[in-house]
Amino acid sequence: MDVVAFLPRHQLSHLRVVLGGEHTLTAAQGWAELQAAVQVRDADVVVADPAADGAVNLEALVQLRRQYPSLPVVVYTTLAPSTIAAIVRLARLGIEHVVLHRFDDEPKRFLDLLEGIPAYALGDRMLRELAVPLQALPVTVLRAIDQLFRSPGEFKTARDLATAAGMNLRTLYRNLEPAGLYSARVLVVSARLLRAYAYLRDPGRSIKDVAAKSGYHSPWQLSQQMRELTGRTTEQVRRELDGEALVSLLAEQVRRRRRKEE
Image 1 (cartoon, one colour):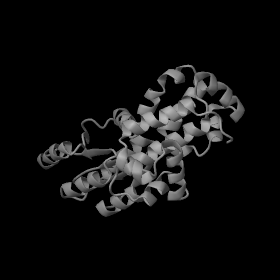
Image 2 (cartoon, rainbow, N blue to C red):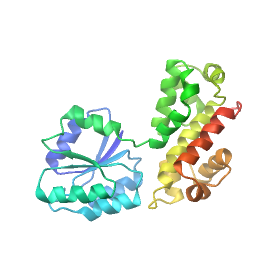
Image 3 (tube, one colour):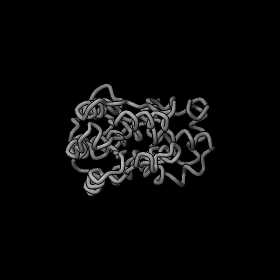
Image 4 (cartoon, helix red, strand yellow):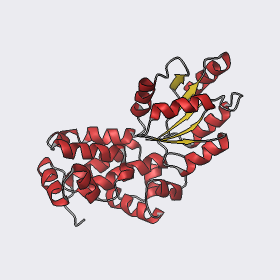
């Protein structure tokens, strides 16, 4: 999990303890730096205190929410009259995750919240859509596919999926096909396209930005894969499909496509 944060020093120190060594933390020194970090990093969640620089600044978080609605935001702040008013307003904008310093930021509880935030809601939906064939897979393959849709940035090719499952590509196919999943490549491409679509929903991102953040070499490569599996360009998908429709379309492709040369 990649966390970007703008917090007072004592809260930032506690967040480092919460995240431990298994997660990445990028600490911004101001609101502009937070905005820039979100723009360039493949962030999973933002953790911020509206009063991080000493005065409650709602507009910075409001602007962040408007530009990147797919990016989860956790408000980590102290209990005070000014911050309570800020929390109420932010909740109306959809920022509902609040952690109060010294009240409910016990490390395990805080970490469970961060790891449980549906940053990859589309990936979770895809896993539910494929639940029946996935139940027929060996545990090692099932875990690899679960990891794929929750962390698609770690997978570039079908061989990466095979490696995550602890087997070679041929063995992976032998496990997938009886369950009705005919292409490991299409599984990987689908997961990457779902991540790209999450970024496409953010009006603050250009298609070039989306391609780069999704791990594509160019917008052309993203558009090629998008057209292959959806029949639409990246811009058409952005305009015409909601998340549920895209998941259904990609799940259908995963189930019906026959093996292609990897």
